[in-house]
Amino acid sequence: NEDVPYDKTIDNTVTLLKEGYLFIPNRIRQYQSNLFETRLLGQKVICMSGKEAAELFYDSKRFQRHGALPKRIQKTLFGENAIQTMDGEAHHHRKQLFLSLMTEVNQKQLAELVTTEWTNSIRKWENDKEVILFDEAKDILCRVACQWAGVPLKDSEVKERANDFIAMVYAFGAVGPQHWKGRNARRQIEDWMKGIIEDVRDGKLSAKEGSVLYEMAFYDQEDHRHLDSHMAAVELINVIRPIVAIATFITFSALALHEHPSYKEKLQQGNSDDCHFFIQEVRRYYPFGPFLGAKVKNEFVWNQCEFKKGMLVILDVYGTNHDRQLWENPNEFNPERFKTWNNSLFDLIPQGGGEAATGHRCPGEGITIEVMKASLDFLVNKIEFDVPNQDLSYDLSEMPTLPKSGFMMNNIKRK
Ligand code: HEM
Image 1: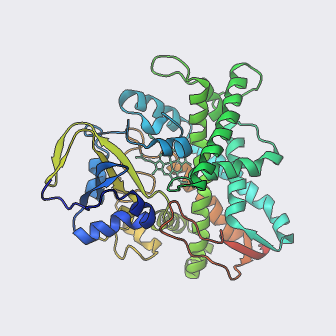
Image 2: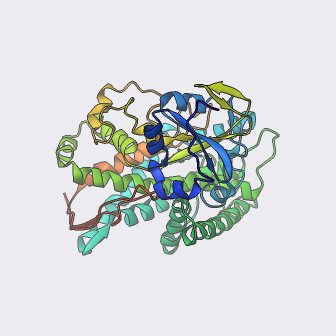
Image 3: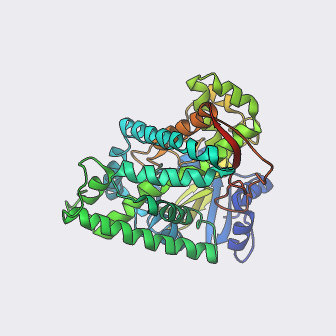
């Protein structure tokens, strides 16, 4: 690949972990090319960014997911051999299961439970000296996600389970203790959920037909066999963990309100479009999922670059959400930009691109948006609070990242 920029080092893994979200965007800018080659995890990889790259990435004739996810990510974030690693008909079949659980009715139901939990928290908060929004959000979301999914969870368990779900998510770009914390968290949660699946199958625990728990326990694969209880637990976790992770976007929503008080006033007027644009801009602007990986299925050439069979290809999610060619002043927070957005499936990709039904795009976008809206409405219209001095900065070299203070609030009052 003579014409393709090559970031020459023996291996860039350490630099990637150091530069974090900006590793790919920095090089895309430096080479003035929407792709470049480098070495990561001991192999040659192609990194690419932008709308056209995203369209290519979601062409399932050219790319597969099997063999693309490093084991260290499977052992923490996703679980081994889960839906994220599947291809073709088997993936499609499993994806229908996930999508069937995320109907609009189910989304609204979850969002209403979230509103109830937020509202119930006010009384306690009025007596608290200060409250860390991220900590409250993860506990509430864990409680609500389990309730909504039909998974029994005692009050006394909530905090520990919520912390384990978060530890899996925050192990993504971590090495050392934080990585091991993620592995231990996964082990604990998998054992717990596997026991629950087995109890449902043995009739020791009742699950309502249509609930996430029931449908995971009794899902028939393509070959008409149930998932083994461990795999069913892994996929059940693939629904509950990301709901808990919405705590990150909720915390960034609060930061956006704090940094842009004029939008807070606008949102108080209650126009649902304004609320929608604000949420979309939070998902675009703030960093969460940094990039995605897939393997070349069949050799092809694109933009003068040879994509050789078996090569790992990385799509820059954060960089595409901040691409100058797609977004005017991408590094400004501006919800108004969504007034004229064309609803492309390949430029706003915080939760992946393409169609969720036919590819790997996140099936939980509807849920994420509804839960974020319920939480934003709560922050804007249901309470008043002060934001004391604290470190609200977030580090783009950490993947995922979060405002350092977790967003501290005090003098909280019901409106
Ligand atoms: C896949 C992001 C919330 C369930 C994904 C992907 C991303 C993503 C980037 C990968 C797309 C790809 O591989 O091409 C997020 C973010 C969320 C979120 C930032 C906000 C917290 C959710 C929720 C659920 C969920 C609430 C479930 C209720 C899944 C599943 C997949 C997935 C099951 C795998 C889909 C597949 O491989 O076909 N998500 N997600 N996510 N997400 Fe989400």
